[in-house]
Amino acid sequence: AITTASQAGLLNSILDARARNDVDTFVELQGIANVVARLAVAAAGGVASPVLTPADFALIGITGVTTSNLAAVIDAISATADNGSGIDSLSKLQTVVDSGKAAARATSLAIISSYNGSNTTPALSDFENIGVTGVDSGNITAINTFIAYKSATDTDSQAEVQAVVSAFAKVAASANGVADGGVSLTAAEFSSLGLPAVDTATEVKLLNELIDFRPSTAVDSYQELAALASI
Image (cartoon, rainbow, N blue to C red; front, side, top):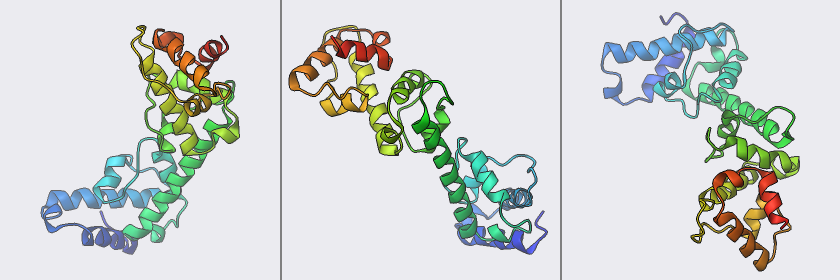
């Protein structure tokens, strides 16, 4: 139920931004009102029941909330005024949500850049939080071996981490156990994988050929690829 001025303000702001056919039934209005009421609970430091989900935020027009950053977003909302005045409009709520997303991103980037193979291991959610694509349950272990080898300054931005992931994707695509030309990497891509010494056309060509006829399981770690590069 909508019981405070702050809740009413947020609800009105949400409705103002919606097309009429999005809110022309009781069920649609009730669904939005329920989310507003649960957000108020979170703002007051409580635990909404049922818990808030990314779908709830999407329903009311808030963008960018995922399962990976949801906890940080809820924390940001909980840090606002208990009376809900910090989220009493759609724009205020989006600003708070954005701060939660930024906090999740910073935490995940710190985990990734500081990973050395023996501390907190980057999870799928960490790569998602910093906007890196191409990481899944099937390749994250391999990718983390390259991240572990790289220095913190070489993995402290989205672009640097994406370069590692994209380069490894080409290694995985090329290593199919058949010498068929594969998917060739450049010297820059080998450098992204921690192999800057592979920097001449001859070295690049040879390493690509060595990768090409091997099965993917023979090149799915930094150590394995570095051993090939040393031949």
